[in-house]
Length: 441
Image 1 (tube, rainbow, N blue to C red):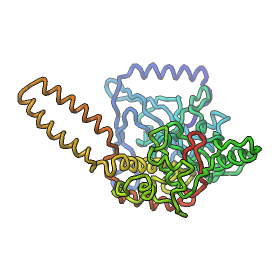
Image 2 (cartoon, rainbow, N blue to C red; image 1 turned 180 degrees about the vertical axis):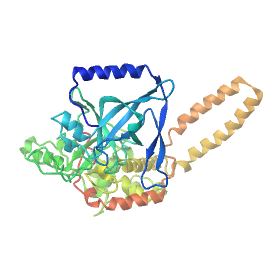
Image 3 (spheres, helix red, strand yellow; image 1 turned 45 degrees about the horizontal axis):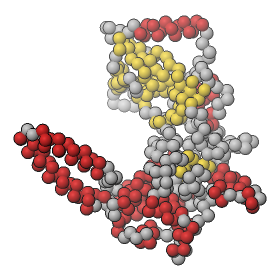
Image 4 (cartoon, one colour; image 1 turned 45 degrees about the vertical axis):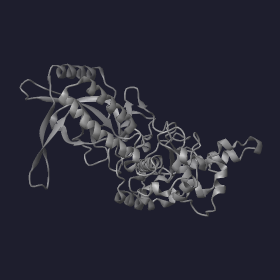
């Protein structure tokens, strides 16, 4: 949506009149209009719009990155349904925001990124073109949307009268707080003299631990390490290192130990953060997970049901970099987190959770109590009903111990492993530690 200049008194009066007229109309759930379509057997198609839809509207900016996008807040119509008005809250493009807030740098945003403003208008239904989907992108999420360059997405709001962006882009990113643009164009990648501008190819590393959830640039982490090493020897604190000093052969196991659901590493693999752990192996290459399990007193069979691709991804770092292939521009977070949870479930239950003896016993008990419940219904006894309800509550609590009973489809993980080969060089970058929790990233 193209932003407007500061409203004059006359414009404010017109807006107030529009609001009063809109308030006098009756609420409507939605509306249907005919949309022209070219090169199709039918000259038009019917499209239904409703409250809450994100929509594209006709404008002079059609077929460009600055197409008008809005969200339907309210729909009202006259009693005879002859006239309908729609209250639309505008998504502004990066160029729109830059025209209204001079301090805003549009290179921080992707072409199809939008900023949800607090500006709104009352619009005729005939201005609408189609329903669209605007993805909500939370950079700290463990399951971000798998964005492509032409996907609409939003990650902040713009209070246009105060010229304030919330949250500020880059506020929670790295030391430098430089906003991350997942899909920069050649124009936004131009080299500047700004020392805070990072390379467009700069790989970022993510720590998924509960109290971290933050991205760091490779260049910023290396700068941090150089600054530490430049200090006098007596002033250097190993606790401030961001380069992993432990053997590279077991780095995969330290990565696997970083638990996305806890503040501390996964207990089984936490051992590989101990300096003495490298004395247990004579491997010159990466230590296989199966060998690590044997060392820790587990049979390798407990992960035999998990696809090789899943096991490899679970032991990978979480990274992202702009314009990377296969949707890695927002990072491989979701894949790695899911894979690690599958491995944790297998280790905790000594194999596939759905084959765990305790779980199978629960199913037997459930069948027995089902028969008891049917008998209670026939007899109409309150005591039996209460006993069954108590059993169900206990059953739910016990089932809560069994995570990820879903089948890890081998074909999916094989495909993912193939995609990871395209970013093998980036995955094999420096061995960093999270500056906050000291976990491998």
